[in-house]
Length: 160
Image (cartoon, rainbow, N blue to C red; front, side, top):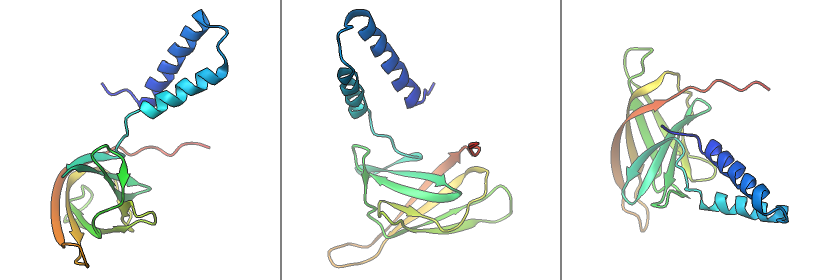
């Protein structure tokens, strides 16, 4: 069973506060803040979206605001700049006959590739990705193909 990290962190902080209240009443709030910051530092990095192992790192594919976002991570699961120029995605949607296709281009921060086209739910399909790196001085061009069973739940918009 997967428990959200925020719930686990909240429970850990509540247990720490209870332990402090039982035995060390003279402890200042600064100590509590330091322990919370330390717990946050020790927290493992998380890949946003569906994690895909790739070489010595990872990819994270997800749909944000109805568009695809492909993020790149190193072996320690920390974000890194994209090492490809673009990605071509194709899939068979459930709402029509035939394939959908979209090209992902670099985002403004350069750490991910994003699509300009809105993707309609349901987000449950076999996704074919082709990563493309163009020839440039000091770079070897290549194409890399990855196939994943993509699944993402549609979250309801939050009320203000």
